[in-house]
Amino acid sequence: MAVINANGIALHVEQMPARDPADTAPPPTVVFVHGMLVDSLVSYYFTLAPAFAAEGMDVIMYDLRGHGHSERVSSGYLLEDFVGDLDALLDRLEVAGPVHLVGNSYGGTIAFSYAARRPERVASVAMIESEPATESWSRKMAVNLQRAADEFARTDLHEQLTREHGAHVTRRVKSASRLLNSSTMARDIPASRLLDEDEIRALRCPVLAVYGSESELAAQEPWLKSLLPDCRTVVVPDQEHWVLMGATDLVRDLITEWVRTHDAAGAAEVGGR
Image (tube, rainbow, N blue to C red; front, side, top):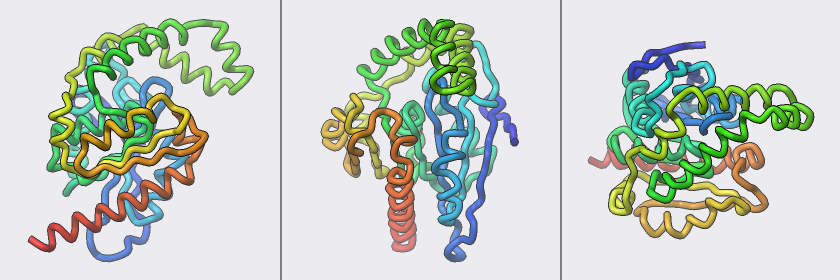
C-alpha cells in the first residue's frame, strides 16, 4: 500500500503498470476515481483495473480524501478540494501526458470538473452513473447527504445490512456515518464551485457517459449530449445506479474500447502536427 502526500492530504494510491504493452510508444494512463461515502478504490481493484492493465494500460487508483485508507480530515470537502487532490497526485506521480479519467458516481463529477479546470491534462472522460456539478446537482447533494447522515447512523439499519449483506457492508456504512457526522462534508459538497451550461459546452475532450436504464440519471442523457461537442452516451438496460457492479463486463468492454480509440486518435493528432 502506497501513501502519497498530495495537496496536503495523505492519499492511499495503488498502481498497476501496463502488462506487455502493444508497442514501444508510452502506454495510455487511466486514472480511476471512485464514488462517495461507501465506495473506495477497492471497487475498481476487483472490477475494471486488472483488465485495463492486462490490455496494456498504466492504471492509477486512489482513495479520495476521507475514504478508504486516505487521510480523514474534519474539513475541506469542497468539490474543488477533490479536484486539487487529483491534480497534485498526478504531479507527485510525475504522470507525463494527458490521462484518461474514469469516474463512478461522484468520481465522475470530480473527473468532469477536473477536465474543465485542467483540459491540457485530460485525454478523455468516462463517467459511470454520474453528472456535472450543476445547481440541480448541488440541491440534490444537499438532500441526499443529509438523508445519508441520518440514515447511516441508525442501529436497526446496521443490523439489517449485516443480516442481508454481511458485516463488511455494515462496516462501510458505519465508516461513512462517522465521516458525515464528524466532518463538514455534508455542508461542503453542496457549496462547491458549480459549472454553468456555457462551461460545460466549453469542454473539448471526448466524454463517454454510461447510465443504468432504471436510474434517475438516465433522464439527463439528451441534455448532456446537446451540450457537449464530443459525447457518447450508453444506457444499459435493466440496471440502476450501481451499473458498475451489475454490468461489470459490459462497462469494462465499453471503456477499454473508448480509451483505445481516443488514445489512438490523440496520438494521430499529435503526429500530424
